[in-house]
Length: 429
Ligand SMILES: *Cc1c(COP(=O)(O)O)cnc(C)c1O
Image 1 (cartoon, rainbow, N blue to C red):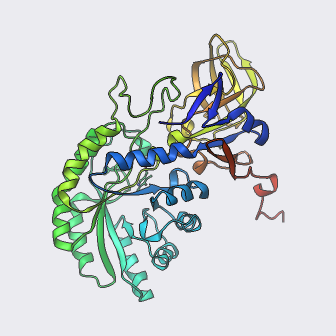
Image 2: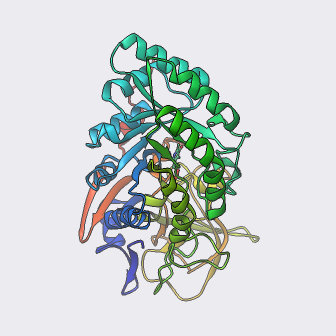
Image 3: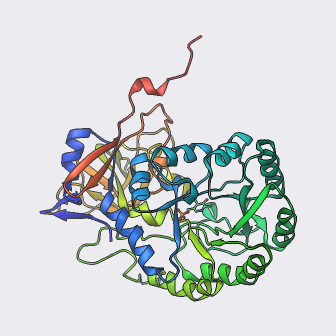
């Protein structure tokens, strides 16, 4: 249950008014609720308690050091996809033995860093990468490189094409049919240590069926690999979808506990479809949720600059753009948009757009929202995952500040970028 709600008509993050934060820190501004993140983490653990899984938070969803530190203190592990993310986890105090290293294109430097820091395992996505990890490990003559193969189970996840990862149309993983042979080869290599097996079929998956289909398809293979190679863990990946619509509906838990009319999966659905199978394995179970933990724990606060009407359409221009939150332009993603102040009576049909010089810089099209005026602020909801972490400086725009709220306390966890940051490292001549 997220902790953004109205009090006397005004929008709050936990005990802190969003208008007050925007007055103090300016806009656009990312605001996260620490209580929400911890609540999601604990809920997931509770519903899967029969498995006592290791939750490895997928760092790319939101990689701010304060968020990583919050989750590390709660006991979370981490799933990283680059040397940069690995360094972030270390800096935030995350334990390396709870950190798995994924990604299709690890460089030698990144492999060396993973070995040096002692990650739990590399999640290997190709034969050639496996050979390279063995080579780098052999050069170092230290401990064997711990590895797990990422299996592509060739299962449709039913999400957006740009975030589907578990079919043979995608670049990810080793084809299901080749996995046993690759383990056999790796098992005979003294530079490698076989620790687990992994899959990740996609993101924003809102039904239990694809997870169940993938796990069922994987089960016999995983059992065989466990017996043959002594694998310790099966990592079922991330991908749990969240509710983006009605994220602020008052008076009910609009999130997970309330099955939607379209019968999206609830958290208990996810658990009941996986736990019985996974328990049988008697292996350590790993999960890699990203969006699920942080998605509904963040909002992007923005101010209305102008309104315009060309006779056919009405536009509301706000000071946040696609460079700050790219999901609507990149994935046609839906984000609820709410006035931060008391909603005005009536409704307005409008496109909420940013200032960036691209036609795709649109947060919503022809949406009915409460009337807005210049100077009003809006909150773009469910922006905690793949928001700031995908932000860019396109149009030479400084990236927003980030704030973490805990109860009535608000802490700036990243300062707004200054102009000078934008050309740091550049040379005029
Ligand atoms: C992105 C990613 C995740 C997290 O996905 P979510 O949909 O945010 O849960 C987990 N594992 C891997 C390998 C990923 O690439």
